[in-house]
Length: 405
Length: 152
Image 1 (tube, one colour):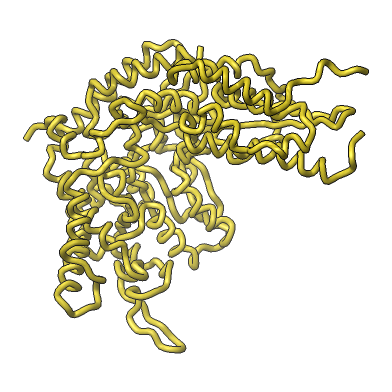
Image 2: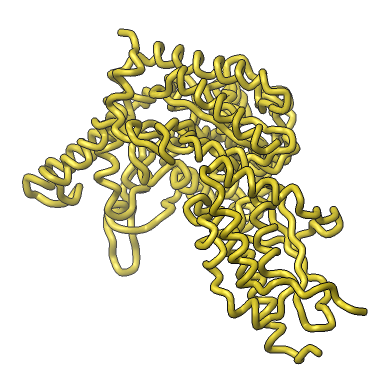
């Protein structure tokens, strides 16, 4: 099928704009990706032509919108090879999805029950478990990673004990770009009767995910890094695992019958979709998945590897620059530190040159402590970035470092 | 003990800074100048870079210390950051706001500094908020001092 980055770029209107008088070079897609015309049009088109609330009305627009909303679920089923639509909960995002799982497990958590996390988790896969620690007396156990984000399966096995309930782990670090051996982690967890949840926010963008092949209990991701809108995400759950979760939020649509003294809940996935859902966002999510499915993902992966290699080779030419994470199979997410220059200084001076990067703790403070830094700069790529943009970034960085002395 | 020659007023200092900045034509010169100012700012010691002195609301770490007041009731501040550009901005803030009497600090428009130097558009909103947090802290000190015991 092939891949032409200029053809792809032309479908992202925002990439034509300028910032501070310079052409925008957007290298912050790991925070949030830009949106193709197909997504923008799907959402605007729904508002113009076919919009109503879902799952209740008996009129034409309600039925059309319900169909559009539910087709987002089936698009997700295909994207991650879920067994059925009943295994996919539409959420407000990945954070919401993790809260649904942690909150849904809460009633069954006894003081002393253990949750295993890696030190490279995003705060969204840490804080919901901290809430279980605070509210239910759960104990958090931390799995260290190596400098490249590598996970030691033997060390993980040693952490698992009779009270371990959940292993919650990223499928790809948002800082180090390293993937984790999710299938091996899930197999180990199954052997010990432990639930697994993978945070797929980054992995879903850069690789083909098959939740049945992974053999995990829960898999979460948001749409907005996957070229879709904000405010929508997905929670995949193995059937028995989803059915065992208590409802996390109460409201319309998630119930079966409501009486004054008792209530029965709807079955998954609707049990976890309280209230009017993000309808337009679901439509945009589906458009993003359809759009991406029409691309040659293997060719995209090759393009992103070329971007990563050119960037890392360029950064290696700076004496003062240290790249965090050098896994051979890492995604095009490159965090780095500069001796004697704060990441915020670098980001600000790059912004003056039209180059957008992220600087900060990347919502991964435990990992920052593990790396011995308070913050890093991070350049992250998407399919629409070009090799020329890597060169613009490197020249802009050289200028910034000259100014900073 | 006699004090050194009294510094120009905060207003005069602002004028002077605005004049300095007006000669800087592009972003490289403006940032280069801010970074130079930061380089000249004395660092705080590790013992002074403690959480009690942290100014929250800044994207990078910022510490602000109020030294003992002078005999004439002037407030003296020192500040530091782990980021070069912020150190430069702090140098600008201190040159306008430190060694001033509380009423002079409170009389200044807190937006004047960034507006007069053309910094508002050059700063990210996070940075602007950080600068605003530092100015708010200084103004709190001034307000507390002027409401407290009158100084000699």
